[in-house]
Structure formats: C-alpha cells, structure tokens
Length: 308
Image (cartoon, rainbow, N blue to C red; front, side):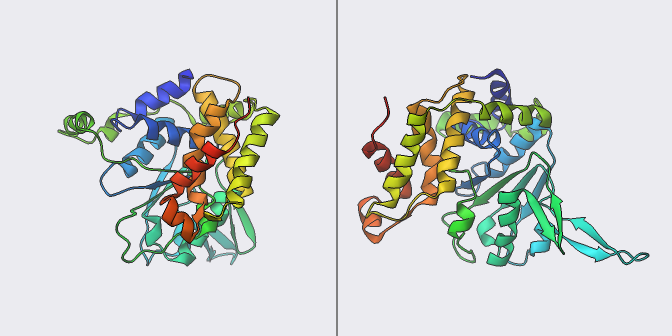
C-alpha cells in the first residue's frame, strides 16, 4: 500500500473499527476528487467516518442536518445589501468548506437537494449572477437511511449520478464491536485523532492518481461494461458517460492505493460495484431476476469479456 495512504487509513481506523474496505473506498473517492453517498441504518458510524476523514487531513468540516425545512440558502449561502454602499455581500453557506457532511440527504426537499447539483459537479456556487469558487479540495459526503422512508424524498437520478461512489458500512462483527465498546468507554475516539496529511498532500496525491496508466484495452473494457448496461432488458437506465469516467478514475485510485502506477482488470472489477450500482435502474424484469443493482453490476462483470 502507498505509504501516505497507509498512514491515512490507519488514522481513520483508530475511530472506525472492522471496516477496512469501507475506509479504503472513501479514500478512493477522496483521491479522485469524488463525492460519496453512504447508505446504511443509523448508528453504524456514517458520521464518524466522515469526521475522521476530515480530521485526518486537517480540512474544514461542516455538517448540515438535512430536514424538510432546510433551505437552499443554508447550503449555498445568500447575498445581502451592504448598509453603507448598497452593494450585495455574499454570505457563504455550509457548502463552502473542504468536507460537507449532508446528513440524511433524502430528508431535504427536492428544491434543497437541487442546490447541491452545481456544488458537486462544477465545484462552484452561482448567486445573483456572481460565481463563487469552492476550495480546490471539496468533497460532499451524504448519508441516508434506506429503511426509514417516512418523510423522505427519493434522490433523483441526476443527483445520484454525481456521487462517485455509494458505499455501506453494515453491522460490525462481534470482535470489532467489542473493540468499539472499548474505544468508546470513556470518550469518543474521534477526539483523539489529528491530521496526518495536509490539504496540499491530498491535492498532490490527486495529481499523482491522474498519472496512473490505463491501457486502451482497459478503456475499451469500461466502455463495454457501460454499453452492455444500456442494452440489457434487465436494466431500464444504464450507466452514463459520467459513470464510465468515474469508473476509470476509481480504477486508477485503487491501483495507486495498492502501490502500482498501472491499472489492471481487477482494479476495474474492484471499483465497479461501488461506482456503478447507484447509477443503474432495473426494469421490472430485472427487479424480479436480479433483485438489486449491485447484482446487476456483478452480472455485467461476469458477462463482459476481460482484456488479456
């Protein structure tokens, strides 16, 4: 494993026990400049994971608890007239930070959810004809509870497509849960960690990830996966070009984390489910045959010819 990534992983795992895969996946999103949707039941560490990642790189962390009464201006900010000059002054919203935790994003109204679209795609905020750039390192980490649906608003496909990865934590196994009890006996372990990388370190790593080599054959493999998703009678909505781009980037990130400067087919396969499953909508037949979109991605991987 890359040494800086190892340092970051170990620091986060001082807070998050027994979830090495999820920790690696959120780091993959970080070093590609992507956003993350964590979908899981309450109490498994979604907020802790986001906070631990932010503290580990010394970034500005803002948390927004989303409810139906949260307004778009709470996210993007607003302009008010200056008392003396009358000129409009911009008052930043919660999104102006390095890490924005949009907790329970599906409880916000569609109007408020849509305020994140420009933030997540263009890394900027446009208000009253003026564009305000966000910090170079900017990551949205959203959470939602898939079980409790009362008073929630389903995220539209356009919003889902802007998340680089969708991951789950799941319940810990008994040994990990015992470790969690021990760590939390006297205080929350999140207060015991500090920064092990800087913002500049992460930006440098993002540039290094871009230089990881991917062959034309592997690019064709990604294109074939996307094409097969669009031509399957089990899938109503296939993988978008943005999904192909994200899979390409996440495959590079996986190779980088493992200390390689080139991508392999296994890197593509290893990044596929978390990168593609939330971009697919199953047809009625697909729901009956496959059950979940993750199974649909696994089926695509099993049926698409792997380059040698």
